[in-house]
Length: 56
Image (cartoon, rainbow, N blue to C red; front, side, top):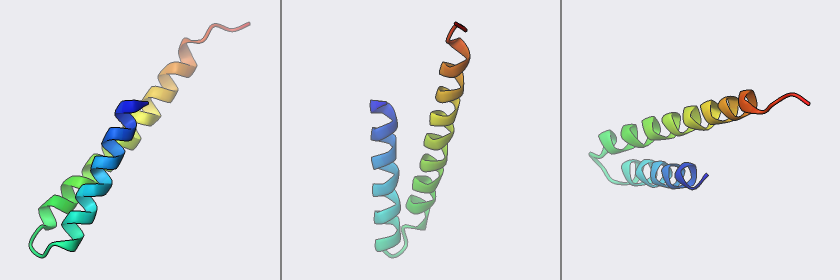
């Protein structure tokens, strides 16, 4: 969960800096890609955890 939060905060920071500074569109696009990867990581982790639990 710590990795998710670190990637999420870094993605938001990159998007904010990329949007605020003129000529830093590439930084904003990297931030958006990082947020997408972060959400995919969270989804994959939740699916992986749910399949490993034994049925009672």
